[in-house]
Length: 291
Image 1 (tube, rainbow, N blue to C red):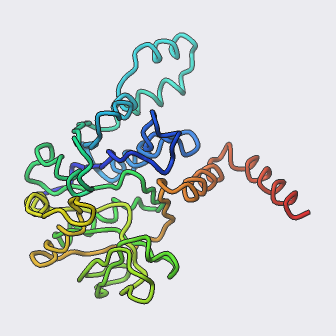
Image 2 (image 1 turned 120 degrees about the horizontal axis):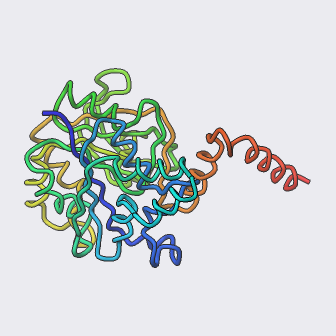
Image 3 (image 1 turned 90 degrees about the vertical axis):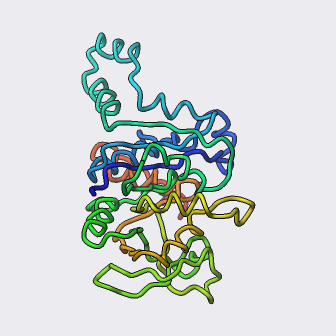
């Protein structure tokens, strides 16, 4: 069965970005001129996804508004003959089919995924973390889907991180299968460097079988009294092959201020219009700091 649907957990409170996220969902914070969530949805669509489910909470209606039509604004842009802006809004509205489900209370990332069970149904789906950007060519999700179509089971993305960074991630213990492809044996959550089985960190996205919903529903609360995807994956490993694709690209945890700033700078430098003058500005800033 093809992977047609994606689930993006986006119910977190974004406390690391307060006060900016008091009224604005952290997923709508812009990296240059697009919010984080839009980059994720565009990657999903570019990878063949047709239906996107956002898992939100009662304070995040703005996420729904972002992907909805806004008649007054579109009429105003049409009257001003701002064709490019109008086209970008209409493309945004028609990116994919959207569903929105609410996570009534913060019970963990596994519970957030479980909230999408009725929408996804009995088919494999992509799960994309709502605050992690991964810049790669081809898109990360497309690479994962390609492996899933060949091997089935579950597939995740991993990046090779510095030893000093392993304690921030779930690190896989795995056997190599092919170039950049591994059979996962275990995932160790945030190990100290001396106990890390590798430097391959699980990031960005999964392709998951529908069986994960049954496992999540039967997973008891773990750390902080919450239901975690990692615990359900540990049980899934006993039933079906789980593979990891080492992505060659650049990852950004946009829930982290330092990495959010790095993403903004990198994406601005890649912009054909903004990049050249912005690069010159950065050279000026660095020159001033060195004097």
